[in-house]
Image 1 (cartoon, one colour):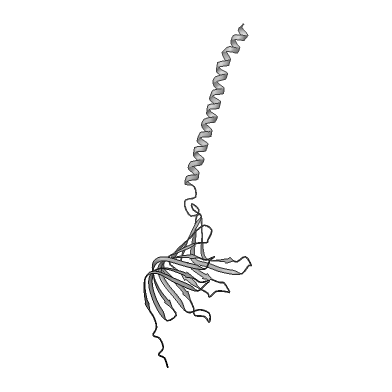
Image 2 (cartoon, rainbow, N blue to C red; image 1 turned 90 degrees about the horizontal axis):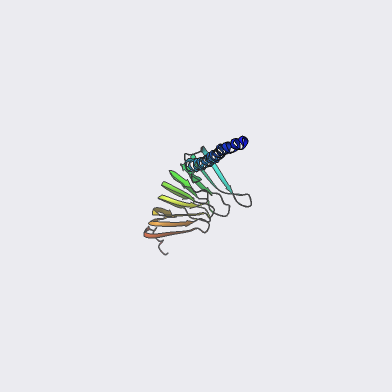
Length: 197
């Protein structure tokens, strides 16, 4: 009888110990999950690396240089996997197309590198070649699609195309086809036509 009393007397203590152990384990799991969620939300906000005086070359499927992006400083932003660049320069290197260079004060490159947003004192230059006329453009913003060799903006542009001067708002320049389109408010200064003999 005394043995049964001892057994039943220890049973509530044993049950209390089990409940406390399970409760502690549950509380520990809740705290761990909350800590991981908070750590994930606040982790890697600051830039995690930078490169100075860099030159990135993109190759085509056949291994030929397609274009390069260089600059004074490139910073990686881990929160959205983008890059910011000081003094960016984008050069098209295709053999089939006239060479074109875009420069700016700063740029923002999207994660896969297919879209380069260039800001402040943006300039595009394409020298005169046997296959193309001189091209120069200035604007405050330019979206470069280097894989497609297309540049576009919705901002005002000042452009020189051969001997012609063009101003307008909004532009699409396709270096692959040699076409340039101005969207609105176009003003043009064209060279005088040669007089007929």
